[in-house]
Length: 125
Image (cartoon, rainbow, N blue to C red; front, side, top):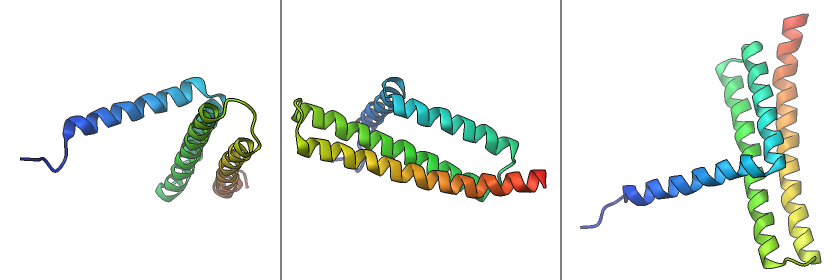
C-alpha cells in the first residue's frame, strides 16, 4: 500500500533545504548583508510598533529578498560549474539573476520607506 505522503522523504527534503538556508547565510556575503538589514528592520518595526498588516508586508518583502538572493546564488553556482571559464552568455545569465535581486530589493526599500516613513512622521510630528 503506498502512502499519500512519505514523511521520511519529506523530512529528508526539509533537512536538505535547511542546510541550503544555513549555507546561504553562512557563506554568501550578500545574504549576510540582507540578514543584517532584516534584523535592523525588525528592530525598527518593534520600536515603531508596526501593526499586523504592516508586519505582513515587511516580512513578505524580507522573505522575497532572501528567496531572490538564494535563487541568484544557486544560478551563479550552477553557471560556474557549467562554464568555469569566462563566457558572454554565462555573464549575461549572472547579470540578469543579480538584476532580479536588485529589482526585489528596490521594491522592498520602496515599501519600507512607505511604511517606516509614515510611522516616523507619526512619531515625530
